[in-house]
Image (cartoon, rainbow over all chains, first blue to last red; front, side):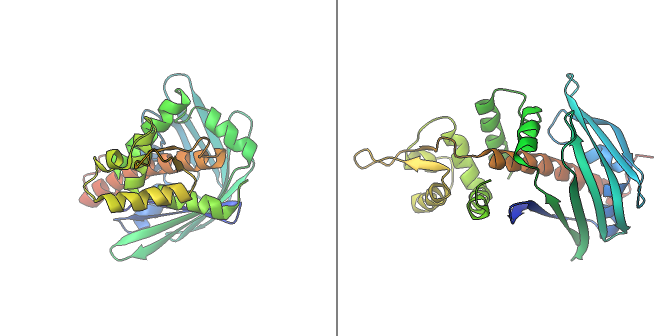
Length: 160
Length: 114
């Protein structure tokens, strides 16, 4: 079972680790090829990514737009800072909700682990105002708060 | 922002499927330890250990009624930061399950995507 781990580091960083049953090359490619990103990087059920731009080179632009098909949506822009295929991606990103959030620098590494890959993603935590905006955007929060919490907790227990 | 140590304790408490199941049950209302143990194929002492972890993380509170120790969710137990991290965890969990499937398809060479 390859459940992700999510830990905080200091007060400003969060580190996500996840194992995949595929080579670092395949997992890396799924993080830089827009046609692949568009098929998995979708968040909650029911959301789609109608626009997915990732120029896949240092200095290249990133733009992802998500929609829930019911009028709600938001987008992310960013720039790729470093690419070291298939080991490491460094990029900066910000959400537009619609005001842009502070830049989040993200370092993602892919390390061979047996026949699979251990991915580690180290990102900055958004500040309190940004978190409020993200929660208010309705991503997983479009319905009444207590019901949303119950649904999420139940989903977890069923899925784990 | 609350101290990182307290946040780590919350995340550690939430990292276990049984404990998330207990929280999901308590979201419906107060429950006794034996009621909480019912849906799980584990012993009551094991459930009690999970309840202690959740209680120490400040996620649930217990009161004493005679010999019973009913549990409920602690009011405001999950801070805005916790809620954000939960949201992030939920979104990433779904994303990576989809990525698992995509990678599995590619490995079989049956990926129809041009």
